[in-house]
Image (cartoon, rainbow, N blue to C red; front, top):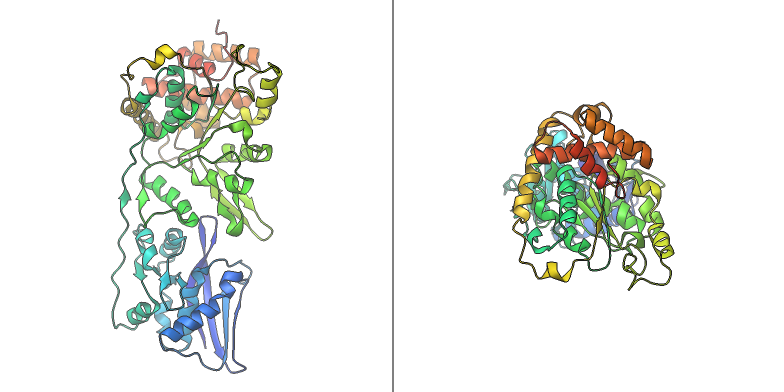
Length: 504
């Protein structure tokens, strides 16, 4: 007789069903696991044997074979401990085999039989719900998995609790969802003195989820502005929160099973590797680009990042997805982020100031910003110079308009976009619009189209740049509450794209 239990194997944010089969047959005593397991899965036999021994359950002197089906799917991680133990208990007729058909399980076993929390409980619960099964997981993962309302989640602290639950001795109560984390107290835009153009660019970027490049001398306020971007972003919707939390679940970043409505703000150091930014490494974990899904990826000292790392961002910026290619699998992660980049104008940082610039002016600026390729720079919707703040500005009182005022306008613009794109798959903001959708929503009036045509011809805008100007102009019109994209909206969008465009 072959006993069965059910679990999952993770491929990106997808949890693929895995059937754990156990056969106890006559022969020399052995305990083998087949079905393309990695080292952590292969070591499960020792953890399972010792955990069962702690329950006074002795394994028979027979040949025990565990098969993880489908056999050609790589199995990685210690979460297979629990389903292997359950299939073995069913084969020994300690647990009823029919009950295991209705349960998806995952969890790591310690040697004393305690269940250790594992990553990926949330996507596992999604898969269990799609198969009309319940989920059995460690107690520490229950609050996270219980966010999937369509799936009953049973969270146990020990293997003994699991046995007593399924034999009807001490039933376990369903797990409750974790707390919704409070929105963090963000820094306020009121702290920024001067830099009105930078604030305006930040507002437009937040309203339409546009990519923004800030260039300025050291200490001009680029990082200060970026750090205040979360204070004007709207909270995640329920769907966005679940999408983002699934990625963070795979990465093991959900705190006590709680889900946050705050948009992610990731700021990797410029020494980060390609695997850290894009994803990869052991078990093809998500990188910073995916962890910033539905939020912000802030890359300070942008030209200092390795050239190969910067170039790998080109495709994810366009598609909103990243493919981590491995020898035996291709893992896809969503990464629809807002890229905010900050850079000095040159290596010394003082290119605009003749009194402080180095002797290599202007070649140092060309060499330094030349590390950013033209195709990558073309993907930024907004580019803004951040000049040094004068001492007179620093002595001024705090600005009258703070983050709350800007956030209200951004929320109104986002609400207009949500209504505009309702029912459209994968399109939530103006930055996502393309093709016929972009033509309909951002069709400028006659004066605006004439201005855009002349600017595109004079400055040699690429087709991508042309469309990005239209998207930004549509966002500016939304901030103004205008249903039509007019000439002033096109002019402002061009001012953030071209170096001092002449609109005459």
